[in-house]
Image (tube, rainbow, N blue to C red):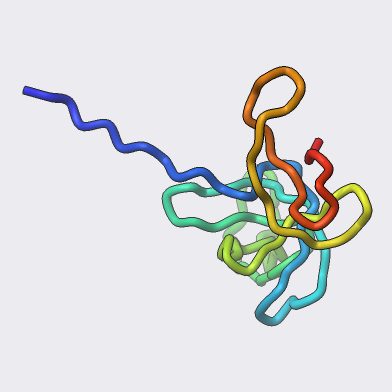
Length: 112
């Protein structure tokens, strides 16, 4: 019996990337990616899509109350920002070391 291995899709966004929101309530805003959730195709971006959560008192927050935190944004609404500060599409090509690396389609430079 063969074991089925589910291969994850290559994403254009990684943790730590600077991104720009291109659609939705926060359109035009920039932020750093805190976490990418590959199963749902969403990402948490610093300072983007802030929501209020009502919390019960616990050890970290003894008073409880309303906490503001980031909610995930769909990856289709994000574009990576290259070294020049422009939002760009991402491609993949071999770098000098012979490894597949991400590059900016607008400027042609490698990302990170």
